[in-house]
Image 1: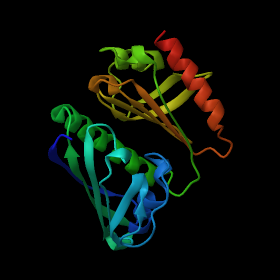
Image 2 (image 1 turned 180 degrees about the vertical axis):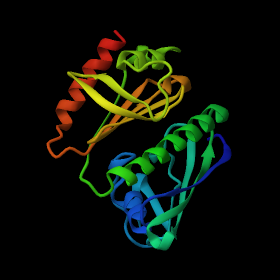
Image 3 (image 1 turned 120 degrees about the vertical axis):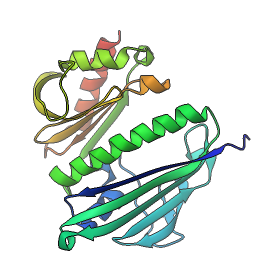
Length: 246
């Protein structure tokens, strides 16, 4: 096994949510901003997602877990650590969060680090969107990858144009999006060459330009509507992606 090289990605931010709400988002509400995960065993030494172990459990102030088994990690990674520190602001109405993702990468370190760093920024942005607009609501989560042709260099640009997003539509813009079977009125809450985030009154739509890192384009939907249909949503977006990259 390749020895690998350590990495560390550290971010700090404030959010309009209480420490308890942030804690819940990290532990039981991950489907609202990341993806659904098994719940933590609430104690130091307890089980954590992805075959990990809880190394610090202090609700609602600090949560740390570690995965040392490469079988539970993406290819090219042998150790993964996540550390979150949460402190109250404004009498507990807001929170300051320090998030540190670290571990060991063993394959194509520069590309893996760049991908992990940029994904961290997008995921934490989505966390803030969830905490600001949808915290605590039941969610239906759908995620899927595009077909093999979506790894092409201009695949993500093609996706943005198929959605009907103007090239100059930046964060804060109101747009009408050509989604499968319907037009969505949405706010652009994130826009970069790697990611697009759209927020409607009932959902967060996340688009991942993973073609920049050698993988297919990805789509994730966090749907907070009471009658959300996970199977129907997945089938509609899968067909949309297949047609886009046919």
